[in-house]
Amino acid sequence: MKIIAANSRANYDYFFSEKIDAGIVLYGSEVKSLRINTGSLRGSYISEKNGELWLSNCFIKKYENADEKNYIPNRDRKLLLKKRQINKIFGILKQGGVSLVPINLYFSNKGFAKLIFGLGKGKKKYDKRQTIKEKDWNIKKSRILKNN
Image 1 (cartoon, one colour):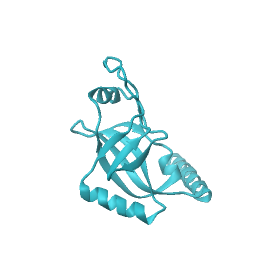
Image 2: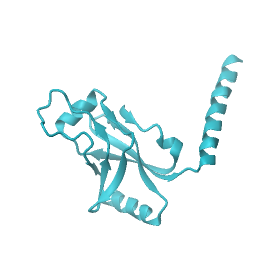
Image 3: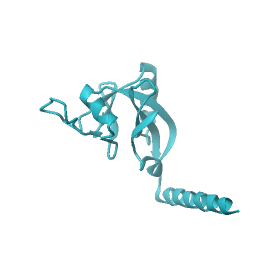
């Protein structure tokens, strides 16, 4: 598994109840561009259109040797999921208070581009502070154990 792009703010801003892998529909030039690590998930989100899930605002730079004249780097890209998974996700979304947040974009062992996204609830400010405290404590703890 080779990670192409990661959303570093996702774990800071959300509690994830479930993480799901999905395939992505890409052009050939987009795959070549991702192989040289030119993708970004910053500011991207997942939306629902006509009973399907779409990754929006995900930036993939134009491949230099591609011949596409009207390339749109932030176009919407369809996510590939089974119908049962889609129905389950829609059921959870209807309950409210849950967002679909892209976490990682990676190449699988077979060479397919995939996206890990999570069903997340937003953290409050005090939850974020607690996360920072735990992270700092784990760093200090590892330093103490290393020195002893």
